[in-house]
Length: 175
Image (cartoon, rainbow, N blue to C red; front, side, top):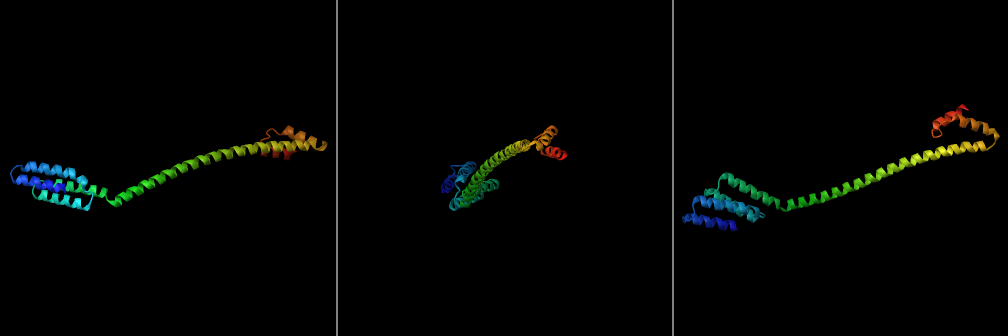
């Protein structure tokens, strides 16, 4: 409401001849510039707009400046509206949740990579263990008696890669 008092004072001083039209326009312009940031409620925006209209009627403010000041005041009022503050708070909360989910996804991805590497290692170990098991089985058959000894000896001579199950099967089939 101080803007209203300022306008009354400079307009009165102009009517009394103490201020020129240019000086009044400068004071009104400065007052409107500084007070637009205080248009945060219905009452203050109403008074601000009344002063804008009166200043334009009295010739202290151009139509362009009146519209610009009106827009500035509306922007401030909307920025301070409760529903805008609710939206901003909701966006902040959602952003925090999304950042938390992204961190969880990164952690899950790292765990899955570790698990994948562990499974690859396990498969390699199982392959080696299987190869040794097959070799031991062949050796044990040789220990079973003279009947199998000749076959085992032939198998060992013909087999080249004891880690290749297909190769071992084909060697055994040929014997």
